[in-house]
Image 1 (tube, helix red, strand yellow):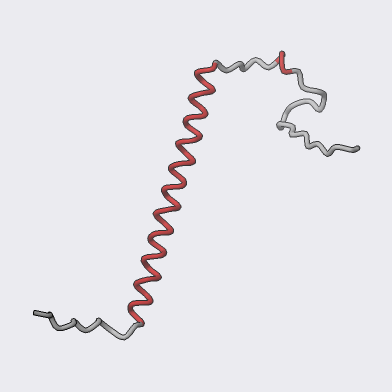
Image 2 (cartoon, one colour):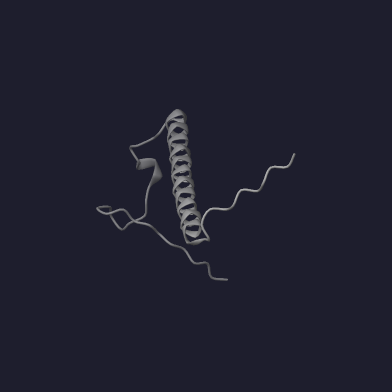
Length: 80
């Protein structure tokens, strides 16, 4: 059975195999956690921004429907 693979090469690197032990950048556990937290915070901020824009769009649609409607509703007489 043949398995498809995609190999991602950074610009400026050699086409040979990568040697993870030769990688000079070793991140500490704390740095990896910090990056994960920053990524999740960015996702949440994006989600909030999308939610706000969707709410604004929905409000605009509702206002435009109301503007085309029959005008203001009549007030019902108060019951005693």
